[in-house]
Amino acid sequence: LTVVMHAGSLLDIVFYYWRSWLDLLRSRRRELVLLVLATLPAVIAALLFKTKLEALYASPRLGAGLLLVTAAWLAIADRLGREREELLKAPAWKAVAMGLAQAGALLPGISRSGSTIGAGYLLGLKREDAVRFSFFMGGVAILGALVFKAKDVVRAKVPLDPVTIAVGVAVTFAVSWAAIKVVEKLSAKGRFSWFALYCALAGVAGLLYF
Image 1 (cartoon, one colour):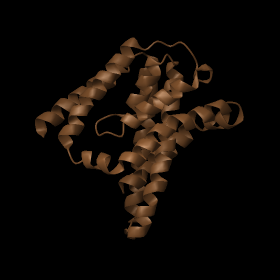
Image 2 (spheres, rainbow, N blue to C red):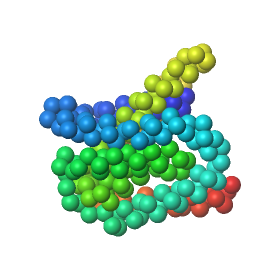
Image 3 (cartoon, rainbow, N blue to C red):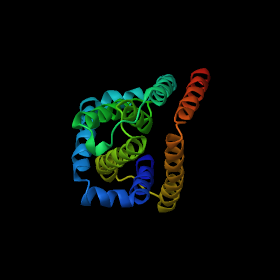
Image 4 (cartoon, rainbow, N blue to C red):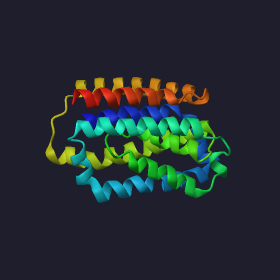
């Protein structure tokens, strides 16, 4: 169910940015190369450390503690990040650096979008480009996870209730759409650190509860 619900997020990224995806195929093909480079670190990390990473998710205290790391990262990125160049004019190593941030987000409590957008800020990318490219990276990552996990679901012959799946995907789609809108607006207004406050409060609450 969890894996299939991610399909709602993937559909959201596709439909929300459909014009940008078309531009990517027509006139921004270099960005496709950057997208591949940015995806590689997470793929390599997932393949090498899959079992160890999955074991970490058994500890809610670790997840809560790393939420505080996410909070610090977001606050630093929002404060120190300076817009200097567009993504298409940026060197390829900056895409790889955002990819390394995404690989770090395989740890529980580390926000994938937060870590990659924050990396984009600190690398001097325009905020609009950092946000969009982060969600593009997320779309590729989700697609890969769906394909990878689908094999396990089929082999295990897991019974799937179509109504439950439909509701889960629909809700995920709606929430993801709203989340992208909020991220874009707060990023444009220089208020990305609000997410840092949210992560800090959630992390402290988690540590106290667990």
